Amino acid sequence: MRKQIAWLWENMDAPYRRRHIIALCICVFSCILLLVNPALSQRLIDEVIVAQNPEPLLAILAVMLAAKLGREGMRYLMVILLETDSQNVIFNLRRRLFEKMQYNDMRFFDSHRTGDLMTRMSADLDWCRHFLSYIDYRIIDAVCTFLFATVYLTIVNWKLTLLLIAITPVLLIITKLFSKHVRPRFVFMREKLSEMNTAAQENIAGNRVVKAFAREEYEKERFEQRNHAFMDSHLRINKLWLTFFPMIELLVNAIQLVTVFVGGLFIIYGELTPGQLAIFTGLSWAVSNPMRELGNLINDLQRFSTSAAKVMELHYGKPEIVDAPDAVEHGRMKGQIEFDHVSFKIDSKPILEDVSFSVQPGQTVAVMGPTGGGKTTLIHLLARFYDVTEGEIRVDGCDVKQWKLKQLRGGIGTATQDVFLFSDTVEGNVAFGNQDLTLDEVKDFARRADAAEFVEKLPEGYDTIIGERGVGLSGGQRQRIALARAMAIRPSILVMDDTTSAVDSETEQYIQEQLRNLPFECTKFIIAQRISSMRDADLILVLQDGRITESGTHKELLEKRGYYWQTYCLQYGIPMKEAV
Image (cartoon, rainbow, N blue to C red):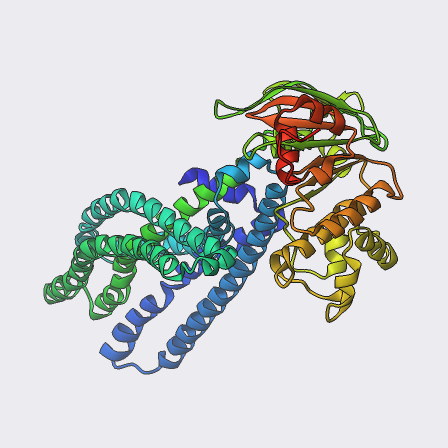
Protein backbone atom coordinates (compact mmCIF):
# COMPACT_ATOMS: atom_id res chain seq x y z
CA MET A 1 0.00 0.00 0.00
CA ARG A 2 2.79 2.44 0.93
CA LYS A 3 4.49 1.84 -2.42
CA GLN A 4 1.34 2.72 -4.35
CA ILE A 5 0.76 5.91 -2.35
CA ALA A 6 4.43 6.93 -2.68
CA TRP A 7 4.30 6.30 -6.45
CA LEU A 8 1.18 8.43 -6.83
CA TRP A 9 2.77 11.22 -4.78
CA GLU A 10 5.93 11.10 -6.92
CA ASN A 11 3.83 11.54 -10.05
CA MET A 12 2.12 14.68 -8.75
CA ASP A 13 3.67 17.84 -10.13
CA ALA A 14 4.80 20.39 -7.53
CA PRO A 15 1.84 22.81 -7.94
CA TYR A 16 -0.66 19.98 -7.41
CA ARG A 17 1.23 18.72 -4.39
CA ARG A 18 1.02 22.14 -2.74
CA ARG A 19 -2.68 22.47 -3.50
CA HIS A 20 -3.29 18.95 -2.24
CA ILE A 21 -1.51 19.69 1.04
CA ILE A 22 -3.54 22.91 1.41
CA ALA A 23 -6.77 20.96 0.86
CA LEU A 24 -5.80 18.38 3.49
CA CYS A 25 -4.88 21.17 5.94
CA ILE A 26 -8.33 22.65 5.37
CA CYS A 27 -9.75 19.21 6.18
CA VAL A 28 -7.85 19.16 9.50
CA PHE A 29 -8.97 22.69 10.40
CA SER A 30 -12.59 21.87 9.56
CA CYS A 31 -12.37 18.95 12.00
CA ILE A 32 -11.36 21.41 14.72
CA LEU A 33 -14.38 23.58 13.90
CA LEU A 34 -16.50 20.49 14.42
CA LEU A 35 -15.95 20.92 18.18
CA VAL A 36 -17.32 24.47 18.29
CA ASN A 37 -21.06 23.72 18.12
CA PRO A 38 -21.08 20.95 20.77
CA ALA A 39 -19.17 23.29 23.11
CA LEU A 40 -21.68 26.05 22.45
CA SER A 41 -24.50 23.55 22.94
CA GLN A 42 -23.21 23.01 26.47
CA ARG A 43 -23.42 26.74 27.16
CA LEU A 44 -26.84 26.90 25.54
CA ILE A 45 -28.21 24.21 27.85
CA ASP A 46 -26.37 25.09 31.08
CA GLU A 47 -26.28 28.91 30.81
CA VAL A 48 -29.50 29.60 28.93
CA ILE A 49 -32.02 26.78 29.31
CA VAL A 50 -31.15 25.43 32.79
CA ALA A 51 -30.28 28.89 34.15
CA GLN A 52 -33.30 30.39 32.37
CA ASN A 53 -31.12 33.26 31.15
CA PRO A 54 -32.02 34.31 27.56
CA GLU A 55 -29.41 37.09 27.32
CA PRO A 56 -26.57 35.11 25.64
CA LEU A 57 -28.97 33.14 23.41
CA LEU A 58 -28.63 35.19 20.23
CA ALA A 59 -24.87 35.52 20.52
CA ILE A 60 -24.46 31.75 20.98
CA LEU A 61 -26.77 30.97 18.05
CA ALA A 62 -24.92 33.49 15.84
CA VAL A 63 -21.56 31.93 16.62
CA MET A 64 -22.97 28.43 16.03
CA LEU A 65 -24.35 29.52 12.65
CA ALA A 66 -21.06 31.20 11.70
CA ALA A 67 -19.08 28.08 12.69
CA LYS A 68 -21.40 25.86 10.67
CA LEU A 69 -21.26 28.09 7.59
CA GLY A 70 -17.50 28.50 7.92
CA ARG A 71 -16.96 24.74 8.17
CA GLU A 72 -19.19 23.99 5.18
CA GLY A 73 -17.51 26.73 3.15
CA MET A 74 -14.07 25.27 3.89
CA ARG A 75 -15.27 21.77 3.02
CA TYR A 76 -16.60 23.06 -0.29
CA LEU A 77 -13.25 24.70 -1.09
CA MET A 78 -11.43 21.53 -0.04
CA VAL A 79 -13.52 19.30 -2.33
CA ILE A 80 -13.05 21.70 -5.27
CA LEU A 81 -9.27 21.68 -4.76
CA LEU A 82 -9.07 17.91 -4.38
CA GLU A 83 -11.29 17.15 -7.36
CA THR A 84 -9.55 19.66 -9.64
CA ASP A 85 -6.08 18.48 -8.66
CA SER A 86 -6.94 14.79 -8.91
CA GLN A 87 -8.32 15.27 -12.42
CA ASN A 88 -5.17 17.16 -13.47
CA VAL A 89 -2.88 14.55 -11.91
CA ILE A 90 -4.65 11.66 -13.64
CA PHE A 91 -4.75 13.59 -16.92
CA ASN A 92 -0.97 14.00 -16.80
CA LEU A 93 -0.45 10.43 -15.60
CA ARG A 94 -2.65 9.01 -18.37
CA ARG A 95 -0.73 11.09 -20.91
CA ARG A 96 2.62 9.79 -19.60
CA LEU A 97 1.43 6.21 -19.61
CA PHE A 98 0.12 6.51 -23.16
CA GLU A 99 3.39 8.08 -24.25
CA LYS A 100 5.27 5.25 -22.55
CA MET A 101 3.15 2.66 -24.36
CA GLN A 102 4.08 4.22 -27.70
CA TYR A 103 7.70 3.25 -27.13
CA ASN A 104 7.08 -0.23 -25.72
CA ASP A 105 8.38 -3.00 -27.94
CA MET A 106 6.53 -5.82 -29.65
CA ARG A 107 7.15 -8.25 -26.79
CA PHE A 108 5.14 -5.99 -24.49
CA PHE A 109 2.12 -6.02 -26.78
CA ASP A 110 2.55 -9.75 -27.42
CA SER A 111 2.26 -10.44 -23.69
CA HIS A 112 -0.52 -7.97 -22.77
CA ARG A 113 -4.14 -8.25 -23.85
CA THR A 114 -5.73 -5.15 -25.34
CA GLY A 115 -8.66 -5.33 -22.93
CA ASP A 116 -6.28 -5.47 -19.96
CA LEU A 117 -4.36 -2.41 -21.16
CA MET A 118 -7.63 -0.53 -21.67
CA THR A 119 -8.68 -1.43 -18.11
CA ARG A 120 -5.40 -0.08 -16.75
CA MET A 121 -5.77 3.17 -18.69
CA SER A 122 -9.37 3.70 -17.60
CA ALA A 123 -10.82 1.91 -14.55
CA ASP A 124 -7.50 1.42 -12.74
CA LEU A 125 -6.44 5.02 -13.26
CA ASP A 126 -9.85 6.18 -12.08
CA TRP A 127 -9.27 4.43 -8.75
CA CYS A 128 -6.01 6.37 -8.46
CA ARG A 129 -8.00 9.54 -9.03
CA HIS A 130 -10.57 8.39 -6.46
CA PHE A 131 -7.80 8.00 -3.88
CA LEU A 132 -6.62 11.58 -4.42
CA SER A 133 -10.09 13.12 -4.49
CA TYR A 134 -11.80 11.11 -1.77
CA ILE A 135 -10.05 8.25 0.03
CA ASP A 136 -7.05 10.12 1.47
CA TYR A 137 -9.08 13.06 2.78
CA ARG A 138 -11.72 10.72 4.24
CA ILE A 139 -8.96 8.87 6.13
CA ILE A 140 -7.54 12.13 7.49
CA ASP A 141 -11.04 13.36 8.26
CA ALA A 142 -11.92 10.17 10.16
CA VAL A 143 -8.64 10.10 12.14
CA CYS A 144 -8.71 13.81 13.02
CA THR A 145 -12.38 13.75 13.94
CA PHE A 146 -11.81 10.77 16.24
CA LEU A 147 -8.68 12.24 17.87
CA PHE A 148 -10.00 15.78 18.35
CA ALA A 149 -13.33 14.53 19.67
CA THR A 150 -11.62 12.05 22.03
CA VAL A 151 -9.24 14.70 23.41
CA TYR A 152 -12.07 17.19 23.94
CA LEU A 153 -14.35 14.61 25.56
CA THR A 154 -11.48 13.51 27.83
CA ILE A 155 -11.16 17.10 29.05
CA VAL A 156 -14.91 17.24 29.74
CA ASN A 157 -15.12 13.85 31.53
CA TRP A 158 -12.35 11.30 31.22
CA LYS A 159 -14.29 8.46 32.82
CA LEU A 160 -17.14 8.49 30.31
CA THR A 161 -14.66 8.99 27.44
CA LEU A 162 -12.69 5.94 28.54
CA LEU A 163 -15.85 3.83 28.42
CA LEU A 164 -16.63 5.08 24.91
CA ILE A 165 -13.22 4.30 23.42
CA ALA A 166 -12.87 0.94 25.20
CA ILE A 167 -14.65 -0.60 22.21
CA THR A 168 -12.06 0.77 19.74
CA PRO A 169 -9.52 -2.11 19.96
CA VAL A 170 -12.23 -4.63 19.12
CA LEU A 171 -13.20 -2.59 16.06
CA LEU A 172 -9.57 -2.41 14.95
CA ILE A 173 -9.18 -6.20 15.23
CA ILE A 174 -12.32 -6.76 13.13
CA THR A 175 -11.10 -4.26 10.53
CA LYS A 176 -7.68 -5.94 10.37
CA LEU A 177 -9.30 -9.32 9.72
CA PHE A 178 -11.52 -7.82 7.04
CA SER A 179 -8.54 -6.20 5.30
CA LYS A 180 -6.61 -9.48 5.32
CA HIS A 181 -9.43 -11.37 3.62
CA VAL A 182 -10.60 -8.71 1.16
CA ARG A 183 -7.33 -7.90 -0.68
CA PRO A 184 -6.93 -11.23 -2.58
CA ARG A 185 -10.60 -10.99 -3.54
CA PHE A 186 -10.06 -7.56 -5.07
CA VAL A 187 -7.08 -8.89 -7.05
CA PHE A 188 -9.29 -11.71 -8.33
CA MET A 189 -12.12 -9.29 -9.20
CA ARG A 190 -9.67 -7.04 -11.07
CA GLU A 191 -8.57 -10.00 -13.22
CA LYS A 192 -12.17 -10.89 -14.00
CA LEU A 193 -12.85 -7.31 -15.06
CA SER A 194 -9.85 -7.45 -17.38
CA GLU A 195 -11.05 -10.74 -18.89
CA MET A 196 -14.54 -9.33 -19.45
CA ASN A 197 -13.15 -6.20 -21.15
CA THR A 198 -10.84 -8.33 -23.32
CA ALA A 199 -13.76 -10.50 -24.43
CA ALA A 200 -15.79 -7.40 -25.35
CA GLN A 201 -12.86 -5.79 -27.19
CA GLU A 202 -12.09 -8.92 -29.20
CA ASN A 203 -15.74 -9.37 -30.15
CA ILE A 204 -16.08 -5.77 -31.32
CA ALA A 205 -12.78 -5.86 -33.25
CA GLY A 206 -13.63 -9.23 -34.82
CA ASN A 207 -17.32 -8.59 -35.47
CA ARG A 208 -17.01 -9.48 -39.16
CA VAL A 209 -15.49 -12.86 -38.38
CA VAL A 210 -18.24 -13.52 -35.82
CA LYS A 211 -20.93 -12.75 -38.37
CA ALA A 212 -19.17 -14.64 -41.15
CA PHE A 213 -19.23 -17.82 -39.06
CA ALA A 214 -22.64 -17.09 -37.50
CA ARG A 215 -21.10 -17.35 -34.04
CA GLU A 216 -23.21 -14.68 -32.36
CA GLU A 217 -24.71 -17.14 -29.87
CA TYR A 218 -21.31 -18.57 -29.02
CA GLU A 219 -19.86 -15.09 -28.46
CA LYS A 220 -22.87 -14.14 -26.37
CA GLU A 221 -22.33 -17.15 -24.13
CA ARG A 222 -18.57 -16.51 -23.99
CA PHE A 223 -19.12 -12.94 -22.83
CA GLU A 224 -21.88 -14.10 -20.48
CA GLN A 225 -19.42 -16.42 -18.72
CA ARG A 226 -16.91 -13.63 -18.15
CA ASN A 227 -19.63 -11.19 -17.16
CA HIS A 228 -20.99 -13.73 -14.69
CA ALA A 229 -17.50 -14.41 -13.28
CA PHE A 230 -17.00 -10.67 -12.73
CA MET A 231 -20.40 -10.40 -11.03
CA ASP A 232 -19.62 -13.39 -8.79
CA SER A 233 -16.29 -11.87 -7.74
CA HIS A 234 -18.15 -8.66 -6.83
CA LEU A 235 -20.74 -10.59 -4.84
CA ARG A 236 -18.04 -12.47 -2.90
CA ILE A 237 -16.57 -9.17 -1.75
CA ASN A 238 -20.00 -7.83 -0.82
CA LYS A 239 -20.80 -10.99 1.14
CA LEU A 240 -17.51 -10.67 2.99
CA TRP A 241 -18.33 -7.05 3.81
CA LEU A 242 -21.81 -8.03 4.99
CA THR A 243 -20.22 -10.57 7.32
CA PHE A 244 -18.16 -7.91 9.09
CA PHE A 245 -20.57 -4.97 8.81
CA PRO A 246 -23.16 -6.16 11.42
CA MET A 247 -20.39 -6.58 14.01
CA ILE A 248 -19.12 -3.07 13.31
CA GLU A 249 -22.63 -1.60 13.46
CA LEU A 250 -23.31 -3.40 16.75
CA LEU A 251 -20.20 -1.97 18.37
CA VAL A 252 -20.84 1.51 16.97
CA ASN A 253 -24.39 1.53 18.34
CA ALA A 254 -23.02 0.30 21.67
CA ILE A 255 -21.06 3.57 21.92
CA GLN A 256 -24.27 5.59 21.63
CA LEU A 257 -26.04 3.38 24.20
CA VAL A 258 -23.15 3.81 26.63
CA THR A 259 -23.31 7.57 26.14
CA VAL A 260 -27.01 7.83 27.00
CA PHE A 261 -27.11 5.25 29.81
CA VAL A 262 -23.86 6.02 31.62
CA GLY A 263 -24.16 9.75 30.93
CA GLY A 264 -27.58 9.73 32.58
CA LEU A 265 -26.14 8.01 35.65
CA PHE A 266 -23.32 10.54 35.81
CA ILE A 267 -25.88 13.38 35.83
CA ILE A 268 -27.79 11.67 38.65
CA TYR A 269 -24.60 11.35 40.72
CA GLY A 270 -23.52 14.92 39.90
CA GLU A 271 -20.43 14.03 37.83
CA LEU A 272 -21.87 15.53 34.61
CA THR A 273 -24.07 18.52 33.77
CA PRO A 274 -26.89 18.31 31.22
CA GLY A 275 -24.85 20.56 28.95
CA GLN A 276 -21.83 18.26 29.17
CA LEU A 277 -24.03 15.28 28.36
CA ALA A 278 -25.14 17.26 25.28
CA ILE A 279 -21.48 17.45 24.28
CA PHE A 280 -21.16 13.67 24.57
CA THR A 281 -24.36 12.97 22.63
CA GLY A 282 -23.33 15.54 20.02
CA LEU A 283 -19.82 14.07 19.61
CA SER A 284 -20.51 10.38 20.17
CA TRP A 285 -20.98 10.05 16.39
CA ALA A 286 -17.53 11.67 15.99
CA VAL A 287 -16.11 8.70 17.90
CA SER A 288 -18.34 6.02 16.35
CA ASN A 289 -18.66 7.20 12.75
CA PRO A 290 -14.94 6.92 11.92
CA MET A 291 -15.18 3.33 13.10
CA ARG A 292 -18.21 2.74 10.91
CA GLU A 293 -16.42 4.25 7.90
CA LEU A 294 -13.27 2.28 8.52
CA GLY A 295 -14.67 -0.79 6.74
CA ASN A 296 -15.65 1.22 3.65
CA LEU A 297 -12.30 2.98 3.62
CA ILE A 298 -10.45 -0.36 3.86
CA ASN A 299 -12.61 -1.54 0.95
CA ASP A 300 -11.65 1.49 -1.14
CA LEU A 301 -8.00 1.32 -0.11
CA GLN A 302 -7.73 -2.29 -1.23
CA ARG A 303 -9.32 -1.49 -4.59
CA PHE A 304 -6.97 1.45 -5.00
CA SER A 305 -3.96 -0.69 -4.04
CA THR A 306 -4.89 -3.42 -6.54
CA SER A 307 -5.53 -0.96 -9.38
CA ALA A 308 -2.46 1.18 -8.65
CA ALA A 309 -0.25 -1.94 -8.66
CA LYS A 310 -1.43 -2.70 -12.21
CA VAL A 311 -0.81 0.86 -13.36
CA MET A 312 2.62 0.87 -11.71
CA GLU A 313 3.54 -2.28 -13.61
CA LEU A 314 2.78 -0.38 -16.81
CA HIS A 315 4.53 2.76 -15.59
CA TYR A 316 7.78 1.10 -14.51
CA GLY A 317 7.94 -1.41 -17.35
CA LYS A 318 10.92 -0.84 -19.62
CA PRO A 319 11.13 -1.85 -23.28
CA GLU A 320 13.88 -4.28 -24.25
CA ILE A 321 14.40 -2.66 -27.65
CA VAL A 322 15.90 0.80 -27.05
CA ASP A 323 18.54 3.02 -28.62
CA ALA A 324 22.04 1.84 -27.77
CA PRO A 325 24.10 4.39 -25.79
CA ASP A 326 26.54 4.57 -28.68
CA ALA A 327 23.91 4.60 -31.45
CA VAL A 328 25.15 6.51 -34.50
CA GLU A 329 23.39 9.33 -36.35
CA HIS A 330 23.11 8.60 -40.08
CA GLY A 331 22.18 10.55 -43.13
CA ARG A 332 19.48 9.27 -45.48
CA MET A 333 19.49 5.50 -45.57
CA LYS A 334 20.91 4.04 -48.78
CA GLY A 335 19.09 0.71 -48.53
CA GLN A 336 21.89 -1.85 -48.43
CA ILE A 337 20.75 -4.87 -46.37
CA GLU A 338 22.81 -7.76 -45.03
CA PHE A 339 21.70 -10.67 -42.87
CA ASP A 340 24.81 -12.34 -41.44
CA HIS A 341 24.13 -15.80 -39.92
CA VAL A 342 20.98 -14.56 -38.21
CA SER A 343 19.09 -16.81 -35.78
CA PHE A 344 16.07 -15.89 -33.70
CA LYS A 345 14.17 -17.66 -30.93
CA ILE A 346 11.03 -16.91 -28.96
CA ASP A 347 10.87 -18.66 -25.58
CA SER A 348 13.56 -21.12 -26.69
CA LYS A 349 11.55 -21.97 -29.82
CA PRO A 350 13.68 -21.44 -32.96
CA ILE A 351 12.00 -19.23 -35.58
CA LEU A 352 14.99 -18.47 -37.83
CA GLU A 353 18.25 -20.40 -38.06
CA ASP A 354 21.47 -19.26 -39.70
CA VAL A 355 19.90 -16.92 -42.27
CA SER A 356 22.38 -15.08 -44.49
CA PHE A 357 21.88 -12.94 -47.60
CA SER A 358 22.69 -9.45 -48.83
CA VAL A 359 20.92 -6.92 -51.04
CA GLN A 360 22.46 -3.86 -52.64
CA PRO A 361 20.75 -0.42 -52.67
CA GLY A 362 17.97 -0.25 -55.24
CA GLN A 363 17.72 -4.01 -55.69
CA THR A 364 14.63 -6.12 -55.03
CA VAL A 365 14.67 -9.17 -52.78
CA ALA A 366 11.67 -11.50 -52.65
CA VAL A 367 10.92 -14.11 -50.01
CA MET A 368 8.50 -16.99 -50.35
CA GLY A 369 7.83 -20.20 -48.48
CA PRO A 370 5.19 -22.12 -46.57
CA THR A 371 3.15 -20.48 -43.83
CA GLY A 372 5.02 -20.30 -40.52
CA GLY A 373 8.41 -20.43 -42.18
CA GLY A 374 9.56 -17.13 -40.64
CA LYS A 375 9.04 -14.74 -43.56
CA THR A 376 7.35 -11.92 -41.63
CA THR A 377 9.89 -12.35 -38.83
CA LEU A 378 12.56 -11.15 -41.27
CA ILE A 379 10.76 -7.80 -41.51
CA HIS A 380 10.34 -7.55 -37.75
CA LEU A 381 14.04 -8.16 -37.24
CA LEU A 382 15.01 -5.71 -39.98
CA ALA A 383 12.95 -2.93 -38.37
CA ARG A 384 14.23 -4.12 -34.97
CA PHE A 385 10.83 -4.92 -33.52
CA TYR A 386 12.78 -7.81 -32.00
CA ASP A 387 16.50 -8.32 -31.56
CA VAL A 388 18.27 -11.27 -33.14
CA THR A 389 19.36 -14.13 -30.89
CA GLU A 390 22.50 -14.77 -32.90
CA GLY A 391 24.21 -13.14 -35.85
CA GLU A 392 23.89 -9.60 -37.11
CA ILE A 393 21.67 -7.53 -39.40
CA ARG A 394 23.38 -4.61 -41.09
CA VAL A 395 21.79 -1.71 -42.94
CA ASP A 396 24.23 0.37 -44.97
CA GLY A 397 27.03 -1.62 -43.35
CA CYS A 398 25.99 -0.70 -39.80
CA ASP A 399 24.43 -3.11 -37.30
CA VAL A 400 20.75 -2.18 -36.82
CA LYS A 401 21.45 -2.06 -33.06
CA GLN A 402 23.72 0.91 -33.73
CA TRP A 403 20.98 2.84 -35.54
CA LYS A 404 18.65 5.24 -33.77
CA LEU A 405 15.29 3.45 -33.73
CA LYS A 406 13.42 6.47 -35.08
CA GLN A 407 15.85 6.87 -37.95
CA LEU A 408 15.96 3.14 -38.73
CA ARG A 409 12.20 2.66 -38.80
CA GLY A 410 11.68 6.03 -40.47
CA GLY A 411 13.68 4.76 -43.44
CA ILE A 412 11.56 1.62 -43.82
CA GLY A 413 8.09 1.85 -45.36
CA THR A 414 5.94 -1.18 -44.58
CA ALA A 415 2.71 -2.41 -46.15
CA THR A 416 1.32 -5.68 -44.83
CA GLN A 417 -1.44 -8.07 -45.77
CA ASP A 418 -3.21 -7.47 -42.45
CA VAL A 419 -3.99 -3.83 -43.09
CA PHE A 420 -4.80 -1.45 -40.25
CA LEU A 421 -6.34 1.86 -41.29
CA PHE A 422 -7.24 4.59 -38.81
CA SER A 423 -10.63 6.23 -38.37
CA ASP A 424 -9.54 9.17 -40.49
CA THR A 425 -9.85 10.52 -44.00
CA VAL A 426 -8.22 8.79 -46.94
CA GLU A 427 -5.79 11.69 -47.14
CA GLY A 428 -4.99 11.36 -43.41
CA ASN A 429 -4.28 7.64 -43.76
CA VAL A 430 -2.02 8.05 -46.81
CA ALA A 431 -0.14 10.93 -45.16
CA PHE A 432 0.07 9.18 -41.78
CA GLY A 433 3.85 8.78 -41.91
CA ASN A 434 4.54 12.10 -43.62
CA GLN A 435 2.33 14.95 -42.44
CA ASP A 436 4.04 17.41 -44.78
CA LEU A 437 2.53 15.86 -47.92
CA THR A 438 0.44 18.12 -50.09
CA LEU A 439 -2.89 16.88 -51.47
CA ASP A 440 -1.34 16.57 -54.94
CA GLU A 441 1.42 14.35 -53.53
CA VAL A 442 -1.17 12.23 -51.70
CA LYS A 443 -3.04 11.80 -54.97
CA ASP A 444 0.17 10.86 -56.78
CA PHE A 445 1.00 8.07 -54.33
CA ALA A 446 -2.62 6.89 -54.40
CA ARG A 447 -2.34 6.72 -58.19
CA ARG A 448 0.88 4.71 -57.99
CA ALA A 449 -0.87 2.24 -55.66
CA ASP A 450 -3.84 2.12 -58.08
CA ALA A 451 -6.08 3.60 -55.39
CA ALA A 452 -6.90 6.94 -57.04
CA GLU A 453 -9.79 5.68 -59.15
CA PHE A 454 -11.87 4.19 -56.35
CA VAL A 455 -10.96 6.96 -53.88
CA GLU A 456 -12.30 9.62 -56.24
CA LYS A 457 -15.60 7.73 -56.39
CA LEU A 458 -16.02 7.85 -52.61
CA PRO A 459 -18.68 10.33 -51.34
CA GLU A 460 -16.14 12.97 -50.31
CA GLY A 461 -13.12 11.77 -52.23
CA TYR A 462 -9.90 12.08 -50.23
CA ASP A 463 -11.84 13.71 -47.36
CA THR A 464 -13.97 10.60 -46.85
CA ILE A 465 -13.75 9.10 -43.37
CA ILE A 466 -13.06 5.45 -44.10
CA GLY A 467 -13.82 4.11 -40.62
CA GLU A 468 -11.94 1.98 -38.17
CA ARG A 469 -9.71 -0.62 -39.88
CA GLY A 470 -11.00 0.58 -43.24
CA VAL A 471 -14.60 -0.51 -42.77
CA GLY A 472 -16.49 0.07 -46.02
CA LEU A 473 -13.56 -0.79 -48.26
CA SER A 474 -12.71 -4.11 -49.86
CA GLY A 475 -9.58 -6.01 -48.87
CA GLY A 476 -7.81 -4.96 -52.07
CA GLN A 477 -8.76 -1.30 -51.58
CA ARG A 478 -7.40 -1.32 -48.04
CA GLN A 479 -4.18 -2.90 -49.26
CA ARG A 480 -3.73 -0.24 -51.90
CA ILE A 481 -4.22 2.59 -49.42
CA ALA A 482 -1.71 0.88 -47.11
CA LEU A 483 0.76 0.62 -50.00
CA ALA A 484 0.28 4.30 -50.82
CA ARG A 485 0.91 5.10 -47.12
CA ALA A 486 4.15 3.08 -47.19
CA MET A 487 5.39 4.79 -50.37
CA ALA A 488 4.39 8.25 -49.13
CA ILE A 489 7.27 8.42 -46.64
CA ARG A 490 9.68 7.95 -49.57
CA PRO A 491 11.46 5.11 -47.77
CA SER A 492 14.91 3.82 -48.53
CA ILE A 493 13.61 0.30 -47.95
CA LEU A 494 10.06 -0.54 -49.05
CA VAL A 495 8.67 -3.69 -47.45
CA MET A 496 5.62 -5.36 -48.96
CA ASP A 497 4.31 -8.32 -47.02
CA ASP A 498 1.67 -9.96 -49.25
CA THR A 499 0.57 -6.43 -50.14
CA THR A 500 -1.06 -7.40 -53.43
CA SER A 501 -2.60 -10.68 -52.28
CA ALA A 502 -6.14 -9.24 -52.41
CA VAL A 503 -5.89 -7.51 -55.81
CA ASP A 504 -6.45 -8.93 -59.28
CA SER A 505 -3.64 -9.72 -61.70
CA GLU A 506 -4.18 -6.61 -63.80
CA THR A 507 -3.97 -4.34 -60.75
CA GLU A 508 -0.89 -6.24 -59.56
CA GLN A 509 0.87 -5.67 -62.88
CA TYR A 510 0.02 -1.95 -62.77
CA ILE A 511 1.38 -1.63 -59.20
CA GLN A 512 4.58 -3.47 -60.13
CA GLU A 513 5.08 -1.13 -63.06
CA GLN A 514 4.66 1.88 -60.76
CA LEU A 515 7.07 0.38 -58.22
CA ARG A 516 9.70 0.15 -60.95
CA ASN A 517 9.30 3.85 -61.67
CA LEU A 518 9.10 5.43 -58.23
CA PRO A 519 10.27 9.07 -57.99
CA PHE A 520 12.87 7.99 -55.41
CA GLU A 521 15.34 5.13 -55.19
CA CYS A 522 14.65 2.37 -52.68
CA THR A 523 15.44 -1.23 -51.96
CA LYS A 524 12.34 -3.40 -52.18
CA PHE A 525 11.69 -6.27 -49.82
CA ILE A 526 8.80 -8.41 -51.08
CA ILE A 527 7.12 -11.26 -49.23
CA ALA A 528 4.63 -13.05 -51.42
CA GLN A 529 3.27 -16.39 -52.56
CA ARG A 530 2.52 -15.37 -56.15
CA ILE A 531 5.30 -16.08 -58.60
CA SER A 532 4.10 -13.07 -60.61
CA SER A 533 4.93 -10.77 -57.67
CA MET A 534 8.55 -11.86 -57.42
CA ARG A 535 9.76 -13.23 -60.74
CA ASP A 536 11.55 -9.98 -61.63
CA ALA A 537 13.35 -9.73 -58.25
CA ASP A 538 17.14 -9.53 -58.20
CA LEU A 539 17.22 -12.15 -55.46
CA ILE A 540 14.54 -14.67 -54.52
CA LEU A 541 14.76 -16.55 -51.21
CA VAL A 542 12.79 -19.65 -50.27
CA LEU A 543 12.37 -19.83 -46.50
CA GLN A 544 11.28 -23.16 -45.01
CA ASP A 545 11.22 -23.97 -41.28
CA GLY A 546 13.28 -20.89 -40.54
CA ARG A 547 16.06 -21.74 -42.99
CA ILE A 548 16.88 -20.53 -46.49
CA THR A 549 16.62 -23.63 -48.65
CA GLU A 550 16.85 -21.93 -52.06
CA SER A 551 18.16 -18.60 -53.32
CA GLY A 552 18.76 -17.06 -56.72
CA THR A 553 16.93 -15.41 -59.59
CA HIS A 554 13.70 -16.67 -61.13
CA LYS A 555 15.57 -18.54 -63.84
CA GLU A 556 18.10 -20.03 -61.47
CA LEU A 557 15.42 -21.33 -59.09
CA LEU A 558 13.44 -22.93 -61.88
CA GLU A 559 16.56 -24.82 -62.87
CA LYS A 560 17.00 -26.12 -59.31
CA ARG A 561 13.57 -27.76 -59.49
CA GLY A 562 12.85 -27.32 -55.78
CA TYR A 563 10.07 -25.64 -53.82
CA TYR A 564 10.03 -22.57 -56.07
CA TRP A 565 9.78 -24.69 -59.21
CA GLN A 566 6.93 -26.75 -57.73
CA THR A 567 5.04 -23.57 -56.77
CA TYR A 568 5.60 -22.18 -60.28
CA CYS A 569 4.13 -25.31 -61.86
CA LEU A 570 1.12 -25.33 -59.55
CA GLN A 571 0.29 -21.65 -60.10
CA TYR A 572 0.63 -21.78 -63.87
CA GLY A 573 -1.07 -25.15 -64.26
CA ILE A 574 1.99 -26.78 -65.79
CA PRO A 575 2.58 -30.49 -65.24
CA MET A 576 5.90 -30.78 -63.44
CA LYS A 577 7.26 -33.21 -65.98
CA GLU A 578 6.76 -30.63 -68.74
CA ALA A 579 8.10 -27.61 -66.85
CA VAL A 580 11.32 -26.10 -68.07
